[in-house]
Image (cartoon, rainbow, N blue to C red):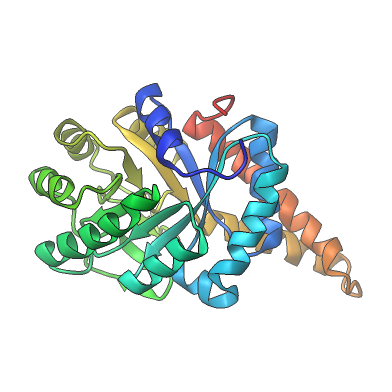
Length: 282
């Protein structure tokens, strides 16, 4: 199976009534931890990097990590640019070899979002690389961008957006937020169902870290085919490092405390795979 695009896995999820977990990774250890979980659960998965993650080590470094790990794996693994914030970055990811790209023009006026998303989709299509775009504004903090004025996705706008951009998947805003929730999020499930009836391409849920499992399952039942998890993975990995170093303050071998961080991420991803229903779908 190894390194693939997201197209076939999302189409299968869309038809099969389950979702693919999309997991943000920050380093080699998190890449290995996520793929270890996928192997155990016989699940396909999408690994993701945001612009700030890319800035930390470079597109080529993350691609090399994921491709090497995917080559060892028996399950399909894709590498996705999450929240690509410019046409230039999207094209850099395409040129380097990412197998899936998101362009996030949700902060732009509607017509400008269409123009940017279409431009990226048109450039990626001849290379067989699927493109995700976002309509509406998911609240909270993602990378260096803070959205304090979230806006829900309008089903009628979604129809026009998908038709004009020819994107492969659509990230929708139904009440989730990036980062840590201060309370339980109130999701507009009926709006999601309306969007699902209006458009035929796979739908994506951002900001799923901290959303109750049953709410995520309900979103999948109503048409979500890709679920993004980022903050929870960072917390799990960091908690492992902190716990190990608290108990062993004199240890200076990164492999020792990194192993506990990896274990935490693997166990968390296994749980999220079960929530998404993608176990044994590889």
